[in-house]
Image (cartoon, rainbow, N blue to C red; front, top):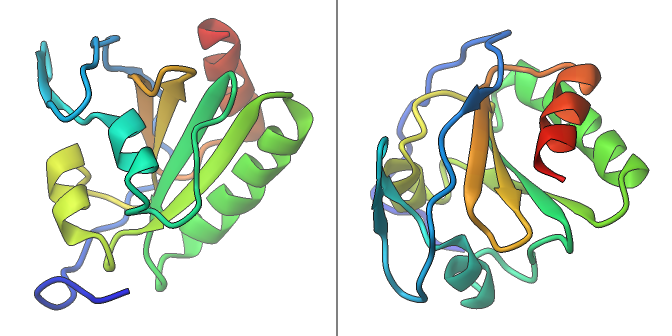
Length: 145
Protein backbone atom coordinates (compact mmCIF):
# COMPACT_ATOMS: atom_id res chain seq x y z
CA UNK A 1 0.00 0.00 0.00
CA UNK A 2 1.39 3.44 -0.91
CA UNK A 3 2.10 5.98 1.77
CA UNK A 4 0.47 9.39 1.64
CA UNK A 5 2.82 12.35 1.77
CA UNK A 6 5.45 10.80 4.06
CA UNK A 7 5.35 9.84 7.70
CA UNK A 8 3.82 12.08 10.32
CA UNK A 9 4.58 11.60 13.99
CA UNK A 10 1.49 10.62 15.96
CA UNK A 11 2.33 11.25 19.59
CA UNK A 12 1.82 8.59 22.23
CA UNK A 13 -0.23 8.93 25.39
CA UNK A 14 -0.81 6.20 27.92
CA UNK A 15 -3.63 5.22 30.22
CA UNK A 16 -6.51 7.49 29.24
CA UNK A 17 -9.97 6.13 29.92
CA UNK A 18 -12.66 5.30 27.41
CA UNK A 19 -14.73 8.35 26.51
CA UNK A 20 -18.19 8.30 25.00
CA UNK A 21 -18.45 10.13 21.68
CA UNK A 22 -22.11 9.74 20.78
CA UNK A 23 -23.95 7.52 18.34
CA UNK A 24 -24.27 9.17 14.93
CA UNK A 25 -26.48 7.88 12.13
CA UNK A 26 -24.91 6.87 8.85
CA UNK A 27 -25.74 7.07 5.16
CA UNK A 28 -23.46 5.51 2.58
CA UNK A 29 -20.85 7.89 1.24
CA UNK A 30 -21.42 10.70 3.70
CA UNK A 31 -19.80 12.11 6.77
CA UNK A 32 -22.39 13.25 9.25
CA UNK A 33 -22.34 16.01 11.81
CA UNK A 34 -22.28 15.00 15.46
CA UNK A 35 -21.75 16.91 18.67
CA UNK A 36 -18.02 16.17 18.29
CA UNK A 37 -17.67 17.19 14.65
CA UNK A 38 -17.87 14.82 11.69
CA UNK A 39 -18.25 11.05 11.89
CA UNK A 40 -16.79 8.72 9.29
CA UNK A 41 -18.95 6.26 7.40
CA UNK A 42 -17.11 3.15 8.59
CA UNK A 43 -19.51 0.77 6.84
CA UNK A 44 -18.65 2.29 3.49
CA UNK A 45 -14.94 2.46 4.34
CA UNK A 46 -14.76 -1.24 5.25
CA UNK A 47 -16.84 -2.16 2.20
CA UNK A 48 -14.57 -0.21 -0.16
CA UNK A 49 -11.57 -2.47 0.41
CA UNK A 50 -9.47 0.52 1.54
CA UNK A 51 -8.59 -1.46 4.68
CA UNK A 52 -7.90 -4.72 2.89
CA UNK A 53 -10.23 -7.60 3.65
CA UNK A 54 -11.09 -6.28 7.12
CA UNK A 55 -14.79 -6.10 7.89
CA UNK A 56 -17.14 -5.06 10.63
CA UNK A 57 -17.86 -7.51 13.42
CA UNK A 58 -21.39 -8.90 13.73
CA UNK A 59 -21.91 -7.16 17.08
CA UNK A 60 -19.05 -4.65 17.40
CA UNK A 61 -15.68 -3.70 15.96
CA UNK A 62 -12.60 -2.49 17.81
CA UNK A 63 -10.62 -0.27 15.43
CA UNK A 64 -7.06 0.33 16.66
CA UNK A 65 -4.85 3.05 15.20
CA UNK A 66 -1.17 2.18 15.74
CA UNK A 67 2.32 3.07 14.60
CA UNK A 68 5.34 0.79 14.24
CA UNK A 69 7.40 2.56 16.91
CA UNK A 70 4.61 2.64 19.52
CA UNK A 71 5.24 0.33 22.52
CA UNK A 72 1.74 0.76 24.02
CA UNK A 73 0.29 -0.24 20.62
CA UNK A 74 1.71 -3.74 21.01
CA UNK A 75 0.08 -4.17 24.43
CA UNK A 76 -3.18 -2.78 23.04
CA UNK A 77 -3.06 -5.26 20.14
CA UNK A 78 -2.73 -8.17 22.58
CA UNK A 79 -5.62 -6.94 24.76
CA UNK A 80 -7.96 -6.30 21.82
CA UNK A 81 -7.11 -9.62 20.15
CA UNK A 82 -7.86 -11.36 23.44
CA UNK A 83 -11.19 -9.53 23.90
CA UNK A 84 -12.22 -10.22 20.29
CA UNK A 85 -11.50 -13.90 20.93
CA UNK A 86 -13.58 -13.90 24.12
CA UNK A 87 -16.65 -11.97 22.97
CA UNK A 88 -18.60 -13.55 20.09
CA UNK A 89 -19.29 -11.23 17.17
CA UNK A 90 -16.56 -8.72 18.05
CA UNK A 91 -13.81 -8.02 15.52
CA UNK A 92 -10.46 -6.29 16.04
CA UNK A 93 -9.02 -4.28 13.14
CA UNK A 94 -5.62 -2.60 13.42
CA UNK A 95 -4.82 0.35 11.15
CA UNK A 96 -1.26 1.61 10.63
CA UNK A 97 -1.58 5.35 11.16
CA UNK A 98 1.45 6.13 8.99
CA UNK A 99 -0.01 4.24 6.03
CA UNK A 100 -3.44 5.88 6.38
CA UNK A 101 -2.72 9.55 7.15
CA UNK A 102 -5.87 10.86 5.48
CA UNK A 103 -7.97 8.49 7.59
CA UNK A 104 -6.06 9.53 10.74
CA UNK A 105 -6.92 13.16 10.03
CA UNK A 106 -10.54 12.42 9.12
CA UNK A 107 -11.05 10.36 12.29
CA UNK A 108 -9.44 12.99 14.51
CA UNK A 109 -6.72 10.66 15.76
CA UNK A 110 -3.92 12.53 17.54
CA UNK A 111 -2.29 9.74 19.53
CA UNK A 112 -1.41 6.09 19.19
CA UNK A 113 -2.81 3.81 20.27
CA UNK A 114 -6.35 5.06 19.83
CA UNK A 115 -9.21 2.56 19.82
CA UNK A 116 -12.60 3.29 18.28
CA UNK A 117 -15.56 1.21 19.44
CA UNK A 118 -17.96 0.72 16.54
CA UNK A 119 -21.40 -0.83 16.92
CA UNK A 120 -22.76 -3.48 14.54
CA UNK A 121 -23.80 -0.78 12.05
CA UNK A 122 -20.35 0.82 12.03
CA UNK A 123 -21.25 3.85 14.15
CA UNK A 124 -18.56 5.10 16.51
CA UNK A 125 -19.91 4.84 20.04
CA UNK A 126 -16.76 5.32 22.12
CA UNK A 127 -13.04 5.90 21.77
CA UNK A 128 -10.01 5.47 24.00
CA UNK A 129 -6.49 6.86 23.75
CA UNK A 130 -3.62 5.05 25.36
CA UNK A 131 -3.25 1.39 26.23
CA UNK A 132 -6.56 0.18 27.71
CA UNK A 133 -6.82 -2.65 30.20
CA UNK A 134 -8.88 -5.70 29.33
CA UNK A 135 -11.51 -4.87 31.98
CA UNK A 136 -11.94 -1.36 30.48
CA UNK A 137 -12.51 -2.77 27.00
CA UNK A 138 -14.95 -5.40 28.29
CA UNK A 139 -16.89 -2.77 30.26
CA UNK A 140 -17.09 -0.47 27.24
CA UNK A 141 -18.32 -3.35 25.06
CA UNK A 142 -20.87 -4.39 27.69
CA UNK A 143 -22.32 -0.90 27.55
CA UNK A 144 -22.71 -1.22 23.77
CA UNK A 145 -23.99 -4.77 23.34
